[in-house]
Amino acid sequence: MFTRIRWFVYGIVASLGATAYVVTRLRRMRERLTAQSVAKVSALSLADVMALAGRRLARPGGAESDPAAGDRGREYTTDSSPRSTAVAQIGRRDG
Image 1: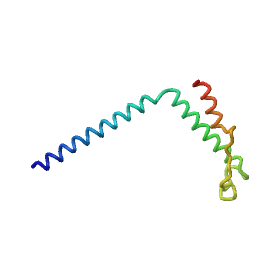
Image 2: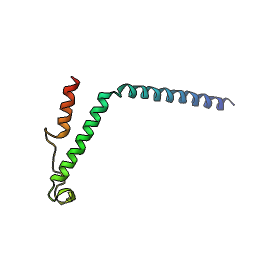
Image 3: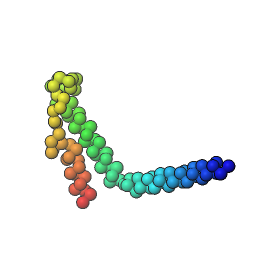
Image 4: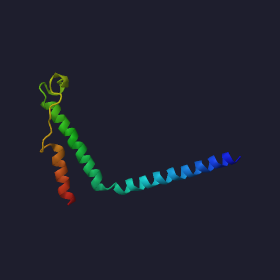
């Protein structure tokens, strides 16, 4: 009998602990969700997509080119990549 009660209490404690952890994490995530952070993530995602499209079009043969034909391993990113430019522009607005 006491074994069942003990496991029931353990279950209650574990459930309360997990609930408190999840609520705290959600509260922190909601505090970080600002208009600036959403804009920054959106700009970085768009810059990544644009950079990927630029790399695919820059391959010999255009977008249909096979990456196994010799382009694999080539470094395409530079300091003037769209992503670093977007980060720099957003950084200027934040400051």
